[in-house]
Length: 531
Image 1 (cartoon, one colour):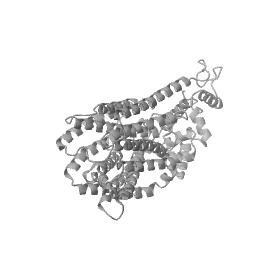
Image 2 (cartoon, one colour):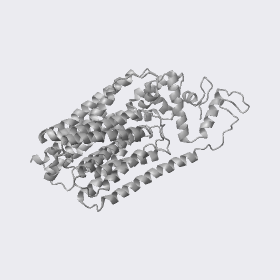
Image 3 (cartoon, helix red, strand yellow):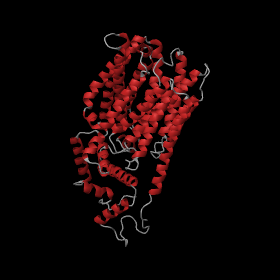
């Protein structure tokens, strides 16, 4: 198969937009123009706490009212970036004005800043989850981190503090414009491929990677995975230079040294993504991220072992911690992207759960580390490590229980091949359908979901369904209502109806029952799907 090489404008713009968001946040937290603000304000806690409170608020909104947020997506597209710029300006200028109480103005600005920041980042990653392959999404995040770590040292070394503030205020608007360009590029790319057959890569890009939708017994384990990586990221970030806002850790470091550190860190981050994330993409969803989790934990303990680093080794320890933070950042978002298509809930809700877990744990760490009440950081790391291992162990046990319970409730007759009755005579249409239902009834819910997904993908290629039609087809076959499909795929009601009409026409069926008969084996060729 010959693949045409062309620039993926959607992925390119998404990487650039994500890097703009990272630069914006890091400037506000560590740039010279902002670093003096927390001391001048006299806040009782570190400023990052209120930024995290904004992330917690938007995460809660994603969980509680995902439909409302989706319905008001276009107005929010214009309002929140502007509000984020205003919030950043309020935080930067709070101590330099006398019109409002400085502490109040800074806190309000930080909360609004956190809301806008996470909302924009979430939209980028949701777009990647819906339009790009898993590997492409992972590399977009890696590229964004690489650009951010390359630009910041030069920015802090050569740009005056006042221009750092102006740049940070403008970056939310720049990111919003880049997202609009990313969205349009995704639409153009999708339209160009609508009439083509569904390849394996395109099937992933359409929203259903190799992992099928989970059943009710699986989603709790996947939520444990999402929460585990959220807690892990919060812990790594809190013990790195990003955990407490203040002076930049790269300040005073020679630009040439920074460039050398950037090259090494980027190479190691790319190696981590390739080996621990992309290469394991075909593993079971519950275990494929365990190597990456272990790598991040090992990096965390390696740094924690340096309780009193020598002055000469301190920069090296700091770079190692920042690298571990980048690895945890990539892990967090690729887990969210991977589970969006596996969990039977709206995408916004999945992101919201991750945001709440991350923000809550991060706020706890800011209070502990910033107040001086934490007796020993290593003890805290051991606690987090134990909790993470327990979560991982519970998932392995869950997978083992599924394997034990996956055996059919009654053994299949080896002398009864697919498509034949008890006496070996070919089955008729009604008998084939009944036999298919009998076979699927003896399987676990997860196996049924796998069979249905595989059959739907085969039929999609055979009947030349478009990628979006294939998405709707799989959800229909898995029992989703039109309202749930509309919410899950973020589509208008009339759009879903149109897709269903096209699906029925291409499959040559009149209703969902006829469609299910076709999926479960009552097709014109007389074949029954393999269990």
